Length: 415
Image 1 (tube, rainbow, N blue to C red):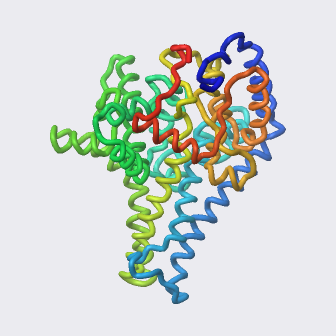
Image 2: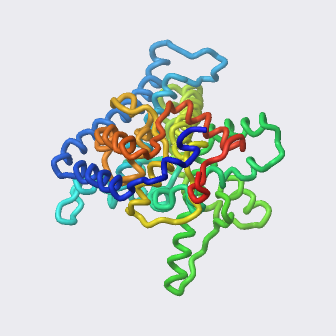
Image 3: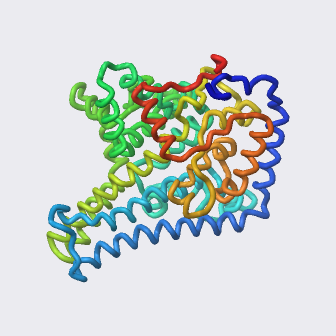
């Protein structure tokens, strides 16, 4: 057993001293002296994403004109263009949308309480037009805000965390299917998870919050997403419509999907048709489908792995936000990947700084990159486990937990 698994690191931990040093690091990197460079860095990352996306589209449009066609077995798909488009879609979510919606640039994009820039969470991706221009994806930004920014971050690893893998995969973990079929289920989920699981489950949490707020006010608010402790998926939404005649969740899901699906699988192929007719339209459609599959797999590998493993803790009790214990849980309930360098961090979606991000959710990408070595050093100084491994090793951990081969540590059990 490792030092982490024995739980001996907890003996004599100076939690207050450790947390005080972490707060000093946080204060330093929230200083106004960093604001200008933080925004410039964000704009650079956004420009990289745009270059990938429109470069992919440009490649897709230029190849027929250049007489360059993919082999017939690809049915018109262009894997190279799809790859660049998929990287861009992932980047807009995991880096631009993610950190902006957390408020990581709020202080730099406001003056005296007035919003002065597009990268403020009160403005970014709000409403249909800004969703289409700032961050268009399968998820509804307002629903993502509830599910991720609030529930996941402030109830990390608890049963109320909507992204707790052990609970969400309980039917698979406790089922009787052969292991090979369980791993096949993980692989299949990776191909479709953003629209199959993530978008409807964020809607579930959004409507649950509206229902709670209405109840407190003595009113009622319809909540069509009722799946208990298990996540809402496209399957549960469709099942409710077909078997129970309940179409509310289906309608909300269709509205959520519409902007991204219309652009990717309707407007883009129409542009292709205008350029070169039916064959080009088919090529653009198939490439958009392939790009979506690629970005699903990419984001699954770098997102779903962040808080899972037999060396990561989950929690059976709640804690107070921003408390010493909150900071500790952020560290021992998360895992980092290889860090350092904008290119490396870009391909990891900046999710390789998950420990720092969960400690201090409302900071810039550049801040996480600069503070990470110091945070790790303080953890080593106090003996607090700091898990950092290759994303591929963490993906193995994820898959093993999902199928029931491994289990997470439990804080209250003394692990």
